[in-house]
Image 1 (cartoon, rainbow, N blue to C red):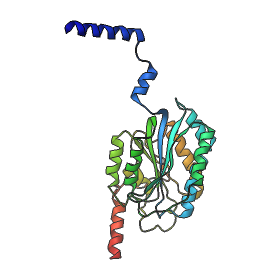
Image 2 (image 1 turned 30 degrees about the horizontal axis):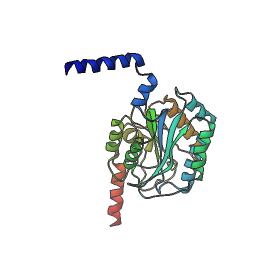
Image 3 (image 1 turned 90 degrees about the horizontal axis):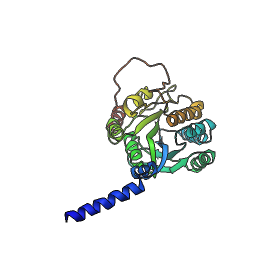
Image 4 (image 1 turned 180 degrees about the vertical axis):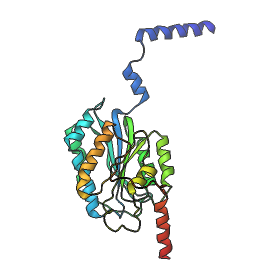
Length: 277
């Protein structure tokens, strides 16, 4: 019995030395079965009814233009691998999410144009409520079967109001961060110069900074004017792709430091429902 085991070990050693150690390529295949990319990016876009049709159109146009933009394409090619994977998700209340663009490889002008055409052709929709927490959890789950192996995983979430349905947003955020996923934000503050709606909160940018985003280098880029949509989205994508973003890019000078109520949206909804009774 012992001689048989020694004979088997000798044969195995001879085979190992004959073949040599595993190549780096073989090791990478065992570590990640997906296509290597510099970044896996989920674009999670708010389509709740607080987003006016013109705001939805501007938002979509910003992403369409971004994937045709030479600066964005240069940022993609500048990475160590020179390509990214992206998926585009629209979201509103709990359980109301849809994938508009499935996971797609972007590495040149042709693949960027493919993304732009899919987004431009997709119909518009609007749904009830605002569940940032559900959108984050849904987006995080998309990485599991993306078919790609990214050096970084990022959720880029946009919205014009606070969470008002589902799990508390900070709890969902922390679950996502525990998976090593970075969350960046695009708070849309087009109505800050006009009387705000019942469910709006002041300083939505600070709400996003304190309650929504997180992870190494997480940041926000705000939109306060319709003319800024395209440039803001382009700027944000370049920063995300290049992984060179600051912590926060403020829309305005910060006011007095006060604790941010991360349940502000839920409280407003409760007040609304009590007023309806």
